[in-house]
Image 1 (tube, rainbow, N blue to C red):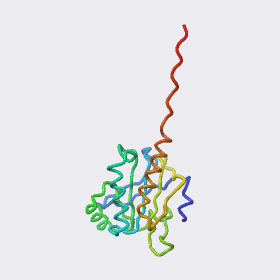
Image 2 (cartoon, helix red, strand yellow; image 1 turned 30 degrees about the horizontal axis):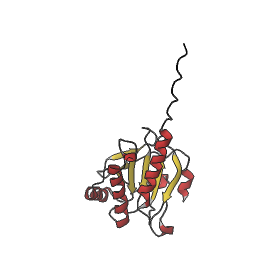
Image 3 (tube, rainbow, N blue to C red; image 1 turned 180 degrees about the vertical axis):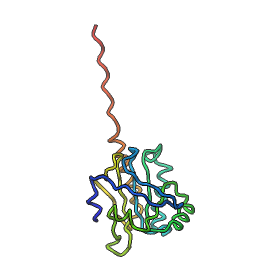
Image 4 (cartoon, rainbow, N blue to C red; image 1 turned 180 degrees about the horizontal axis):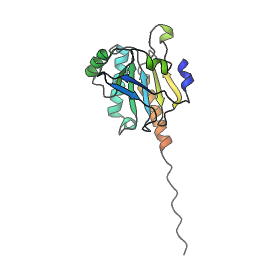
Length: 175
Protein backbone atom coordinates (compact mmCIF):
# COMPACT_ATOMS: atom_id res chain seq x y z
CA UNK A 1 0.00 0.00 0.00
CA UNK A 2 2.59 2.52 -1.07
CA UNK A 3 -0.26 4.77 -2.17
CA UNK A 4 -0.73 5.70 1.51
CA UNK A 5 2.17 8.12 1.12
CA UNK A 6 -0.02 10.26 -1.19
CA UNK A 7 -2.67 10.94 1.44
CA UNK A 8 -2.80 14.61 2.36
CA UNK A 9 -0.56 15.59 -0.57
CA UNK A 10 -1.23 17.10 -3.97
CA UNK A 11 -2.45 14.46 -6.39
CA UNK A 12 -0.19 13.90 -9.40
CA UNK A 13 -1.23 15.38 -12.75
CA UNK A 14 -0.75 13.27 -15.84
CA UNK A 15 -1.94 12.68 -19.39
CA UNK A 16 -3.07 9.28 -20.69
CA UNK A 17 -4.93 8.17 -23.81
CA UNK A 18 -8.68 7.82 -23.38
CA UNK A 19 -10.71 5.03 -24.94
CA UNK A 20 -10.63 6.87 -28.30
CA UNK A 21 -6.85 7.21 -28.18
CA UNK A 22 -7.03 10.96 -27.55
CA UNK A 23 -4.89 12.50 -24.78
CA UNK A 24 -6.80 13.13 -21.57
CA UNK A 25 -5.19 15.16 -18.80
CA UNK A 26 -5.97 14.54 -15.16
CA UNK A 27 -5.26 17.88 -13.52
CA UNK A 28 -6.49 17.64 -9.90
CA UNK A 29 -7.68 20.91 -8.36
CA UNK A 30 -7.75 22.84 -11.63
CA UNK A 31 -11.53 23.20 -11.80
CA UNK A 32 -12.27 22.88 -8.10
CA UNK A 33 -14.22 19.66 -8.68
CA UNK A 34 -13.54 16.52 -6.62
CA UNK A 35 -12.25 13.52 -8.58
CA UNK A 36 -12.95 9.85 -7.93
CA UNK A 37 -10.01 8.16 -9.62
CA UNK A 38 -10.37 4.40 -9.74
CA UNK A 39 -7.81 1.89 -10.92
CA UNK A 40 -9.10 -1.47 -12.10
CA UNK A 41 -7.21 -4.57 -13.30
CA UNK A 42 -8.89 -5.64 -16.53
CA UNK A 43 -11.58 -4.15 -18.78
CA UNK A 44 -14.38 -6.59 -19.46
CA UNK A 45 -13.67 -8.95 -16.58
CA UNK A 46 -16.57 -9.76 -14.27
CA UNK A 47 -15.47 -7.64 -11.29
CA UNK A 48 -14.25 -4.70 -13.34
CA UNK A 49 -17.46 -4.64 -15.36
CA UNK A 50 -19.54 -4.62 -12.18
CA UNK A 51 -17.42 -1.82 -10.69
CA UNK A 52 -17.46 0.32 -13.85
CA UNK A 53 -21.23 -0.10 -14.27
CA UNK A 54 -21.86 0.82 -10.64
CA UNK A 55 -20.04 4.12 -11.26
CA UNK A 56 -22.03 4.63 -14.49
CA UNK A 57 -25.29 4.04 -12.61
CA UNK A 58 -24.27 6.26 -9.69
CA UNK A 59 -23.55 9.11 -12.11
CA UNK A 60 -27.08 8.76 -13.50
CA UNK A 61 -28.93 8.19 -10.23
CA UNK A 62 -27.22 9.83 -7.26
CA UNK A 63 -27.46 13.57 -6.68
CA UNK A 64 -23.96 13.79 -5.23
CA UNK A 65 -22.57 12.89 -8.70
CA UNK A 66 -24.85 15.20 -10.73
CA UNK A 67 -24.40 18.74 -12.01
CA UNK A 68 -20.64 18.45 -12.34
CA UNK A 69 -20.25 18.00 -8.57
CA UNK A 70 -17.66 15.28 -9.14
CA UNK A 71 -15.57 13.74 -11.88
CA UNK A 72 -15.21 9.96 -12.11
CA UNK A 73 -12.21 8.60 -14.04
CA UNK A 74 -11.38 4.94 -14.58
CA UNK A 75 -7.85 3.71 -15.34
CA UNK A 76 -6.58 0.25 -16.30
CA UNK A 77 -3.53 -1.18 -18.07
CA UNK A 78 -5.64 -2.31 -21.03
CA UNK A 79 -4.83 -0.99 -24.53
CA UNK A 80 -7.00 1.74 -26.05
CA UNK A 81 -8.75 -0.73 -28.38
CA UNK A 82 -9.90 -2.91 -25.48
CA UNK A 83 -10.99 0.15 -23.48
CA UNK A 84 -13.05 1.36 -26.44
CA UNK A 85 -14.90 -1.96 -26.71
CA UNK A 86 -15.47 -1.96 -22.95
CA UNK A 87 -16.81 1.61 -22.87
CA UNK A 88 -19.11 1.05 -25.84
CA UNK A 89 -20.44 -2.32 -24.65
CA UNK A 90 -21.15 -1.09 -21.11
CA UNK A 91 -22.23 2.43 -22.18
CA UNK A 92 -19.85 4.07 -19.72
CA UNK A 93 -20.38 7.82 -19.38
CA UNK A 94 -17.11 8.96 -17.85
CA UNK A 95 -13.46 9.06 -18.96
CA UNK A 96 -11.82 5.64 -19.17
CA UNK A 97 -8.07 5.80 -19.65
CA UNK A 98 -5.42 3.38 -20.87
CA UNK A 99 -2.33 3.04 -18.69
CA UNK A 100 -0.37 0.55 -20.81
CA UNK A 101 2.93 2.18 -19.85
CA UNK A 102 1.97 2.19 -16.15
CA UNK A 103 2.48 5.95 -15.83
CA UNK A 104 -0.61 6.47 -13.66
CA UNK A 105 0.05 3.30 -11.70
CA UNK A 106 3.55 4.57 -10.91
CA UNK A 107 2.47 8.15 -10.14
CA UNK A 108 -0.28 6.96 -7.78
CA UNK A 109 1.82 4.11 -6.35
CA UNK A 110 -0.73 1.44 -7.21
CA UNK A 111 0.85 -1.97 -6.79
CA UNK A 112 -0.29 -5.49 -7.42
CA UNK A 113 -3.57 -6.74 -6.02
CA UNK A 114 -4.59 -9.71 -3.91
CA UNK A 115 -1.27 -9.94 -2.13
CA UNK A 116 0.61 -9.95 -5.43
CA UNK A 117 -1.58 -12.46 -7.26
CA UNK A 118 -2.95 -9.91 -9.73
CA UNK A 119 -0.72 -7.54 -11.67
CA UNK A 120 -2.87 -4.47 -11.08
CA UNK A 121 -4.73 -3.63 -7.87
CA UNK A 122 -8.24 -2.22 -7.64
CA UNK A 123 -7.74 1.08 -5.80
CA UNK A 124 -9.97 4.15 -5.65
CA UNK A 125 -8.69 7.61 -4.68
CA UNK A 126 -10.75 10.60 -3.61
CA UNK A 127 -9.12 13.86 -4.65
CA UNK A 128 -10.78 16.97 -3.27
CA UNK A 129 -11.52 20.14 -5.23
CA UNK A 130 -8.15 21.59 -4.21
CA UNK A 131 -6.31 18.63 -5.74
CA UNK A 132 -5.37 16.92 -2.47
CA UNK A 133 -5.62 13.16 -1.98
CA UNK A 134 -7.99 12.82 0.96
CA UNK A 135 -7.50 10.88 4.17
CA UNK A 136 -8.57 7.62 2.66
CA UNK A 137 -8.33 5.44 -0.41
CA UNK A 138 -9.96 2.10 -0.94
CA UNK A 139 -7.82 -0.90 -1.85
CA UNK A 140 -10.19 -3.80 -2.34
CA UNK A 141 -9.38 -5.99 -5.33
CA UNK A 142 -12.10 -8.55 -4.68
CA UNK A 143 -14.75 -6.21 -3.26
CA UNK A 144 -15.52 -4.36 -6.48
CA UNK A 145 -18.97 -3.38 -5.17
CA UNK A 146 -17.51 -1.29 -2.36
CA UNK A 147 -15.85 1.31 -4.59
CA UNK A 148 -18.89 3.29 -5.77
CA UNK A 149 -20.30 3.23 -2.22
CA UNK A 150 -16.96 4.47 -0.88
CA UNK A 151 -16.96 7.34 -3.41
CA UNK A 152 -20.58 8.25 -2.66
CA UNK A 153 -19.83 8.56 1.07
CA UNK A 154 -16.74 10.69 0.41
CA UNK A 155 -18.50 12.98 -2.06
CA UNK A 156 -21.31 13.53 0.44
CA UNK A 157 -18.69 14.42 3.06
CA UNK A 158 -16.90 16.82 0.67
CA UNK A 159 -20.21 18.42 -0.27
CA UNK A 160 -21.01 19.04 3.40
CA UNK A 161 -17.58 20.63 3.87
CA UNK A 162 -18.40 23.03 1.03
CA UNK A 163 -21.76 24.07 2.47
CA UNK A 164 -21.71 27.43 4.13
CA UNK A 165 -23.66 27.61 7.39
CA UNK A 166 -26.71 29.85 7.12
CA UNK A 167 -26.16 33.36 8.40
CA UNK A 168 -27.89 34.49 11.53
CA UNK A 169 -30.91 36.70 10.96
CA UNK A 170 -30.10 40.37 11.04
CA UNK A 171 -31.01 42.17 14.25
CA UNK A 172 -33.76 44.75 13.82
CA UNK A 173 -32.47 48.25 13.44
CA UNK A 174 -32.97 50.39 16.52
CA UNK A 175 -34.69 53.67 16.02
